[in-house]
Image (tube, rainbow, N blue to C red):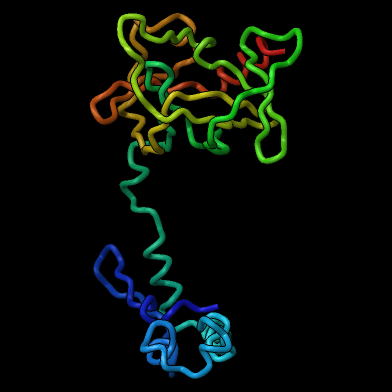
Length: 237
């Protein structure tokens, strides 16, 4: 079904040229329908123009119409990534916080970020395993990533406020869930901006950290997902 005519404008490309869009010959819904003066006598029957056969027929005509000249070329130019996006080997990473430490993982292993829920403990199991959590009807192993990395909460001040979330990650056939005290967002980072982990980093964290970069004035440790998943396989059984 097509969009209302007032949304079928002419989008602009980054270079300033207009993309071609198809128009509807008689947009009655824009004149006398829900986006107009609502004087259409059929509104009482159908409640909304979305339910009207005229609107549906216009949508079919819109979708069945041939593409205008240069339509594919214009959209290819609009959607193609800029050359400078990948200059210097830029990678996408999800930034999150454990206690007072900001960390990141490549988006390639990210499955989803979801609301907090309490894990169900597994009898006679402890250590790094927090328990099982239900994610969309499936049970997944929830691990204590802060404990694995040796990240401890501050003892001399109140914890930094945030919105705890569960992060689901996957690499090949391995899937894990862990708690993050806060989640920032996905950032694109140039590999040239990633430096070696400082020697002051905890031994466990340093072994699993591929480097450090600065984002929004804070140091972020980029975890090595391959080593992280291997360590989890070895230590959570």
